Image 1: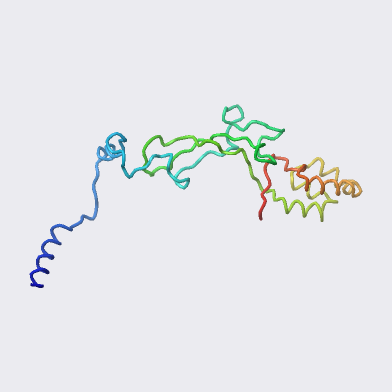
Image 2 (image 1 turned 120 degrees about the vertical axis):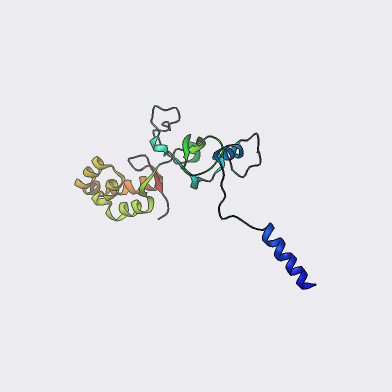
Length: 187
């Protein structure tokens, strides 16, 4: 009996469960699969549903100022702000990488992106520069305020007064990088 069952499984197994090494699909079959009306539950997803690993987006800084999507100046700054309500939001254009299969338009807009620009300005580093090397204007040089830094350096921090004022301005949030970028908080 066991011999008969093994023989039967051997015959059925070789004829029913044979797989090919490769699957050949024509371009018409791919078009049929990606057609939303024919196969709404297709495994191929909409392009704008893909995770951010599968597409690249333009930078907020690369949007021209004359474009309607560009970050407009608010409170004298084009990028960032001290508080959330001070930050403008815009939309950016994204494009799916080549070789990624998806349905729909391969170029799309993502809305509600904050107009924030980061550069190499760390708050803690600048505060330490201001405390320990503020008499020599290292803090102002690191923030890009070159003209003011030269004056501060020549007067040795305004004989110490300018040095103290810059520390207070930095702590209160009134002394920011020259390029309107936001602080990088963590090292």
